[in-house]
Image (tube, rainbow over all chains, first blue to last red; front, top):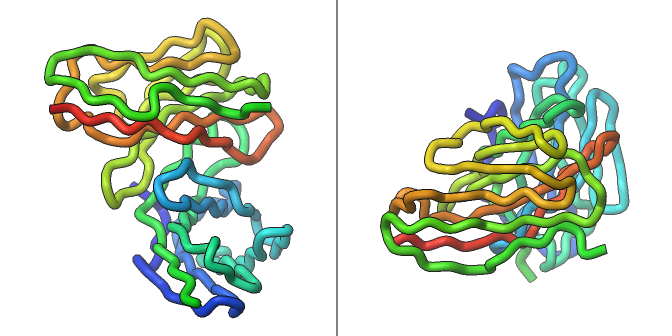
Length: 111
Length: 112
């Protein structure tokens, strides 16, 4: 079973920041938080990952709470192309890296 | 770089038929994975491989077989297709020192 809890759906206005929450209260010390997204029925696409520090890349920012029990993915200026299902996953980064996907959050960006 | 390619894109099978889903990657990745995704659900890991000649079961391996004779290819075999295997199948790969998995476009399988 997935070790994360996400809201099933969210809406956001185009041009605004989209903030997607994720709870992972049973995360272990060596587990990372990953975010992937899936647009329509395409293969999932990696967005960002982090261990305990906040991370930012060209796609998004990841804010992890100090106790690491929850995190937020931020898309700073959402566009219509960001409409997708977003998956928050926790797991060990090295070795086999067997990802466990939950049902994710369906994010709809509205014009 | 084509990345991860999968064939076929779509296939209809009759119950009891067999088929092989093909997956190829051109990134020289040692790690390869097969996932299935049922409607409205997240992906579930079927099998994975950590290198040529080495494979292991994931969460839902029953009804499937895999082999890994080369670094590039990781075919998934269905021996006796059942309606429960109707799903979208995704292949993914990852390099040894990479944190991310790269996914193929998927194969949509319908078993009737």
